[in-house]
Amino acid sequence: MIRFTGTVEYDGGELVEWRAGSAALVAWEAYCRRQGIAPYDGSHPQTLAAFLAFVSLGIREGFDVWLKSVVDVDSKPTPEAEAQLAELGGETGVGGEVVDPFPAEASAG
Image (cartoon, rainbow, N blue to C red; front, side, top):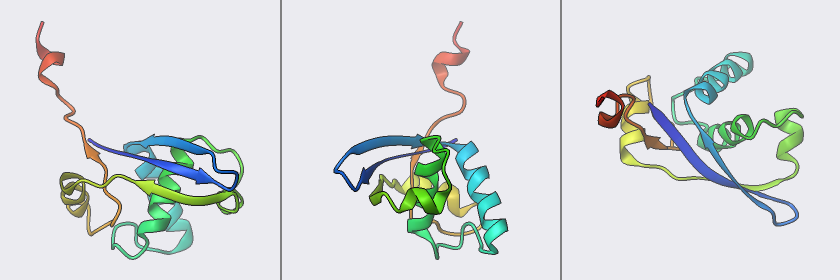
């Protein structure tokens, strides 16, 4: 699994932390289909980061409307996340945290 984390800074200076996973990537892929852009070719890293934050924060207004109140979206990339996303078909430029889907403590019992 891949997890993305970061912060959003709003016009008023408010900082909000966000965390996204595979469901947000599914939403990103659907957004890309609607916009006619390739989801993982690395050409839209800022849009990907903003969209993941938008989805993970559960914003109800439209993406473009929400962006008007945003100053910055920060994501915390890791090389492992970039490598795993590259396997999906390209580069993202965003990154995230790779999370083991089968942690040892889950199977111990």
